[in-house]
Image (cartoon, helix red, strand yellow):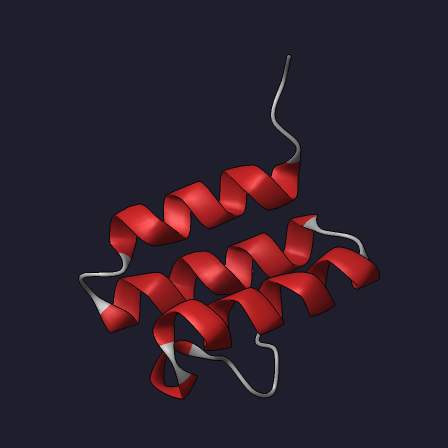
Length: 63
């Protein structure tokens, strides 16, 4: 069964969590591909698992 984008984003973020700058870049990309409810869930997950230093506020959009 294919993973949904939210679960894929969480897995990717776990893998890049060694580098805060890279983490934030990937988090911004994830925000672009998720629905609004999923973005809220991902925000809570980031703060719970990694703390506020990994959180993006406001949500930046990379183009």
